[in-house]
Every structure is written in C-alpha cells, then in structure tokens.
Amino acid sequence: MKALIKEREAEGLWTIQSGIFPENEGSIELHKKTGFRYIGKRERVGKLNGEWKDNLLFERRSKTVGI
Picture (tube, rainbow, N blue to C red):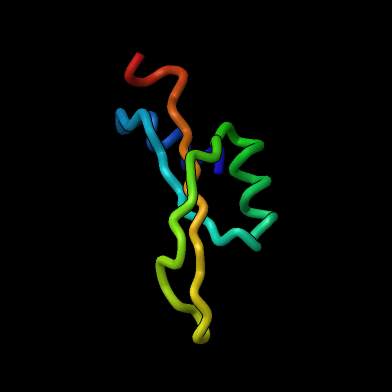
C-alpha cells in the first residue's frame, strides 16, 4: 500500500479513493493505518452470490501533492 501511495504521488495525484465491503475488516484496518479516512457508505450497490452488498468509501489525501 505504501508503494502504491508513493507511486500515485509521483504521478501528481493528491487523492486516492477506495471502496471496501464492510466485512473486510483487514482491508479497512490496512487503509486506516496508511492514512485513509472513512468518508461514507453506498448502500446496496451490487449483488454478490444473490446478496445485496454495501460499500464503504475511504479516501487518502496527500500531505505533499496539491497543497
């Protein structure tokens, strides 16, 4: 994740967004540890195995690009 962030900043991108299933606690923790913040939830955005799934939205803004 740190390499991805570094690459995006080198390309001049100042915001990275992620959508994560709520039950994917490992991914949520990884995003939080690398500076992402929770910004909202999209409800029932798609079906997986016949079950409607929500999607949590996370965002990380660069501390060096775009300031």
